[in-house]
Every structure is written in structure tokens, then in C-alpha cells.
Image (cartoon, rainbow, N blue to C red):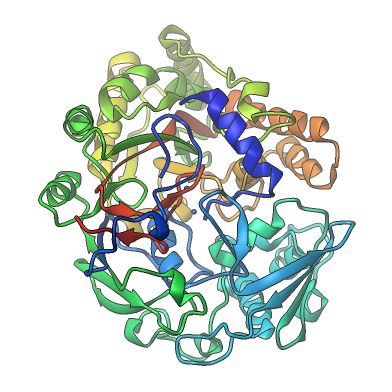
Length: 566
């Protein structure tokens, strides 16, 4: 990754506002947004505008309020649109809203909705659709894993946590007291708790998508796919479980003239070898992250074989393992530290992942904004070192504290993926060699894996986190007590204070110092997570496929893509 290029480009992007990664093509090593061409620059559109891609896992849900993973994000982008959308340069563009006004104090946003915006059944999209959808996402009974992304709205957290006995803020039982209201059919007014510079971009995130009112009464709305009513550039056509998903162009979409693709075929295979073979044989137009993957052991050869189609791009995402801090033996911090310190990250990225990834010793990745430049440049990730002898000592001390003569059996879980399996086996081998610990590795289907992780049915679990917006808060808030994405159930009062103090502070230096203190607690002091590497996005794109957008976080958008004549 060319760190200076990344900094300069992100600075330019941030000058226009927030860059959103919805749950992120660029040139190798730069980290900027790249649109791979525009229709006006094309060599002539292909007659057949059917895009073929692969998903390595079936989306666990197509409900925007329940979404929390990159596979679901990829598909939801086809089907839904928020108040704004993010373009190839990271700028907020008109989505359902044609324009907006922000008050001088940064607390009030007034969105004017496009009167031509329709649901796929012909119903008009109204401001009340957004009010109802955001209320649905915030209702405690919905149990949205991303409800906290709406907490920037006045009263939203109090409403979402109204039945939470541990919540110390003001509880809100009447949604009318939450800072979102429809002042007329096409005007939405939003009031925030505190000025939030990245809020506008956040309205492009899937938890903020509107959902048709019939979802409230039709319990098959998100599973009876042919009858799903959506507002995005595509509609659901086919969903054959375990085989394929097909979406077709929505001619009623208000910006249908911007959409060149008539259909997108998504195969469903977890085999990276099969995916690569399908790409080479012309059955796929794109392969690789974030929706697919290239076998790590074939990255060097495909880079040499297809240099004009290969891209390895630095993105603001972190690959890590998380410990269940309430499950033996990882309820002991010394044992957690021993496991983290006893692996060698450089050989993992050099010999296993082989995509130019950077060994990680912190949780906030490069590319995330700090006080004046990147947070990672201003606050080094030197929270721990790899030291086998020290790790052995800590393991011995931890076992003694817990009264162990033999360490309890340990299982590492990961979701179905050839690459995740290779990483897990390499790390388990290091734990055996360096600590003398036998660790069982267990592959789980994506939906089952997510459920087990969310329900703390694990000891060590593979995980990854990509930016939803460009601020360290996005990476550190998730580990606060009670956060729905805090699968490790880590809890530390000082950590919570450090993170929450950043919300009300307008002092950039103080905010970043508080973030650094919090990250130190998370990684150095408590080792609730075990950072492994900072991601790169490795992919292959056919020369005739243009207009694919990959943002700084690694989130991908195919909606404005198109196919040129071969």
C-alpha cells in the first residue's frame, strides 16, 4: 500500500464530506476509489448486458434491518437505495433524496425526496416510509445488529434500549420523541444528538434503507423473493437456494437511465478454485473480494498470467480473531495474550494470503482519518510484539491462576472459505509449535457461523471488520459494553468512557487521543481481539467490464457497471 497516496486521496475525498463503506476498482497499492470507466468513454456497449459474478456464501438475510455482512451488502445494493448514494469518488449523490439542507450547528438535516421515486410495485416512496423503516430498525424486538448506527439521531438510543435495564441514558418509549419526522409527503426532517460530520454519508448505509410498508404485515416479505417490493435499480427475479441469485433491471427506478446492466447472475459457491476456473473459462466477469475470492496459493500465478486484470488494493479493513472472554480458557487475559503473541504474522501474509496484506498489531486499519492525517500514522500500532518466550511465560502464569495443569480443549471456528481454512490451519500449527497447544479448527456455514458468533457459542472465532464511515469510532464503538456487534462480550468501563467521550468532543486532538487510549485497552491491556492483518482487496476484472466501484473500505458497487463489446 502506498501510504502517502492513500493519505492524499482520502484527504481529497474527505474535503467533500464523509466516505461511506456500506458492510469498499482501485489501482494496485493506492487505496483510492476508482470507477473503471464511464459509458461515454466506452468502446461500444455489448448487446448482452448480463453481468456474472459469484458469492462465496449465501446472504443470511435480505432484510436491511438484519443485515451485517458483505455478502448481504452486495445484494442489498442491487435492491435498495437510501436517501443518498456514494459515487466512485466517495461523494454523496442524490439517491431517494434530490437535495438536502444542514443547519449551521450541524444538528438538523432536511431531505427533499424525489417525487418520481417509486417502489417496484408503483407505489410512491414517501418520507413516512423512512420514518417507519427507521422505527422498525430501532424497535427492541427487531433486534437489529446495526441499530446503533442510528444512535446519532436524537432519542434513537433511548428508544432502542428502552427495555435495557443497564442503559443509563434517558429512555424513550414514544417514537414520536425520536428526532425523525415527515413534515410532508416528500420532506424528511432529522435531528441529531450531536454534530456528526459523516451522518450524510451514513444515510447510504443499509440500516438506513427504506422498507415497503407491507413488510410490517407480510411475514414472508423477505423470503418470498419474487414478490419482494424494493426501490433500488434491480428487482429480485430468481433465488435458488445454494445455487444462484438473479436480479433484473428495475425499469421503474427513478434513475433507470443510469443503469446499463439488464441482469446480474450471482452463482453461489464457496470453492475459490471453482470460482477462479469459472472466471478463466468466461463464466464470470469478476472474481475476488469482497463477494468472492481467489485461491491464495494461486495469487502469484494469476498476477503473472493476467497482469492487466489483476488488482491488489489496500483497504480500510482488519482481519482478526476474537476471543470469547467469558469462555474458558480465554476468560484469562494472560492466556489471551499468549495466543496473540505466539504467532508470526509476516509469514501468514507472505506465504498464506499472498495479497500484500500488512501485519496488524492494532485494530484501526490504515486509511482511517486521524487528527491531521491517518490515525494509524499518528498513533502507531505497537500495542504488543510477537515473542514466543514471553508468550510461553504468560500461558504458564495464566494456567496457574486458573488452576489448570492441562489447558482445556480449544476450538477455533471460521466460516466456509478456502482462504480462511488455510489461515486457521497455519495459526493452529503455530500455536502447536510455539505453545504446545492443540487447537481444533472447525469450518461452519456462513449463516450458522454468524449465529454462533453472535450467541457467544465459540472460544476463538475468525472475524473481519470494514469501515462503514471514515472515523476510528466505527472500529472502536463496536467493543463497548452491550454493543450488538461485540461478540466477544468484552466490557471495560474506562474503554466505554474513552469511546463515548469522543462523541461530544469537537476537539480533534482530544478525540484521537481518546481513541488511542481505548485501542490500547482493547488490544494491549485486555487482548479481547487478536489482530492478524490489514486487508487488501484482491480481484480479477475482465477488460470489458467497466464502471465497477470499490471504495476505500472494500465495499463494492456493481449497479453502475456495464459491459463493453469484447
